[in-house]
Length: 149
Image (cartoon, rainbow, N blue to C red; front, side):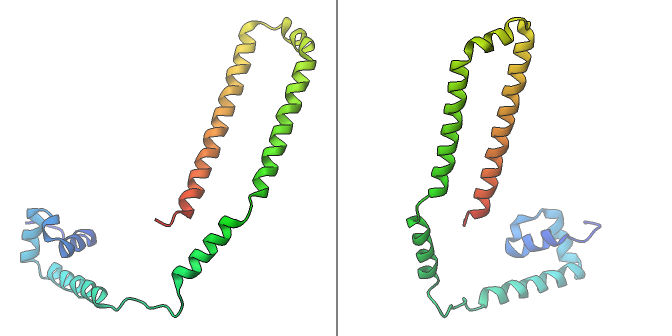
């Protein structure tokens, strides 16, 4: 026989599905008055919950939610366009700068050993990858907060 009483989780599992717990726990339930009382309480709580009437709203919830969703879909994404425009202009500016000053950049790295350039490139790439992964995780976290499932 089980020495300790069943946990709340085990008692709830037994009330919901008596085959969800082990044989030793079932044997304990048959011989323990305290656990039998807990099971009776949980059965009363669960039956009360099942017998409650479903809530009725005085308004059409579906209509309210869907109208807000439709209104949100109709609004243009002007903020996103501005971000893309600024990013594009920044990349374009950096590209022109590198193109027109390429001779100066070559002179800058001419005396630097190749291993130093590789270390700087790997470090910069690692930082960029780390930042991209961090932004993606933040995006997924925010998306999960908005999820209605």
